[in-house]
Length: 256
Length: 255
Ligand SMILES: Nc1ncnc2c1ncn2[C@@H]1O[C@H](COP(=O)(O)OP(=O)(O)OP(=O)(O)O)[C@@H](O)[C@H]1O
Ligand SMILES: [Mg+2]
Image 1 (cartoon, rainbow over the protein chains, first blue to last red):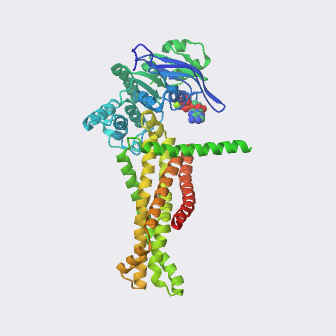
Image 2 (cartoon, chains in turn blue, green):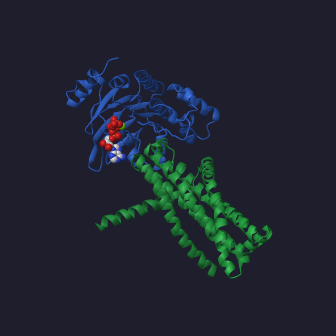
């Protein structure tokens, strides 16, 4: 199925997406190779969430092709799509936890539903391991509404990791987190790649985290990808929006 | 101006037909999420039980009380048990139960699925390769389809109890005489058609409320609108179905 580990995990070519007269994506090209973290930066409202949603098939692109793990997402039948989605983890910008379930049930849900024959003990162990990795083991019996926004986001990441996906899409995993937790999540993203050879797209506003987790960094500007090399290569570009993004992050902010 | 309106109407009808068809497709395809269906049945049953009990009982008493003078005018108050039983079994129990459930359960389903839609919980299921239609819509609709008939029977019994209480205090009729009078006047067709009606009503409440919730757009306001529409449209559909089914049963009776 998956093909040789040499072929890229995600390939986007000329992807466009409009909502009525609002042209959000205007020909996006992007490659993510195996066991590589690609960071996508971009101003609010430029379509970063739209981009990740088209990759996982929640939104259909108007034009262009999207290949994930060698399969064309835009032409897959529902059943094939599900088989592919089991291999993709998606951490939502606003967590999207199931609010009628406890934290433990939230994290266990994808596992129980996709591998119903998994023994109870194994489910419990894997839930513990996933929650441990985001530092929320003792939140297990709580309900999502009882957690802070940042904690909810970490549970969302744990839920996305429970099926040990080959591809991870993190939609702003560190937005709204304090610097300490931010650092922990960054470490987690790096560590997930190291231990499972996961390929990932990490959406973020935060340049420190982009530098920390990104093997390559691109920026979504007016519906197109700029850069795609290393962090320093991107910010060496003479592009006004790239420059102002950099200036804001590193001059207007307190370094502590 | 007419053409786009007609177009939009056709699309709306098509979307709803597809939604209904999908339910029956899922009905013949495992997994059935038995655990979730049972949970939903309990939810629907428990949620409606107090109101169904109270309404059924009150209707039994009041309807008996109101019918007495007309029958007494013909010196036929001994017909009360038969008259009441026919009214309850054929018309009141299914309709009252369905209307109560549209209010209690319909709004619940509309709001619940609506808020799951706007907070991306339904998307979250989809990206986890979980079929949200099966897990959310199918389970709820199956639960209402099963529970509304059960509640209808229960409502009928409670209404009969209310009626008996009124009759026994006024006419001093014994329970066995009341039951004998009542049940000898209703036929199997009455009971079956009443149950069939309740099944149709239950399905209607589940599928319409789910559709409204599942397709919610636009934040908190959208959730409110979905809950509201779930109730209004379910009730509207139930009245239309009632009118149609009465015609069909009438034709069957005449055969
Ligand atoms: N389902 C939708 N229907 C209509 N418009 C949409 C939809 N989803 C997104 N948009 C529009 O697309 C644009 C991009 O949205 P998106 O959520 O991708 O931004 P973003 O880059 O993720 O921003 P942020 O950093 O604030 O999360 C916005 O202008 C938004 O209004
Ligand atoms: Mg976003």
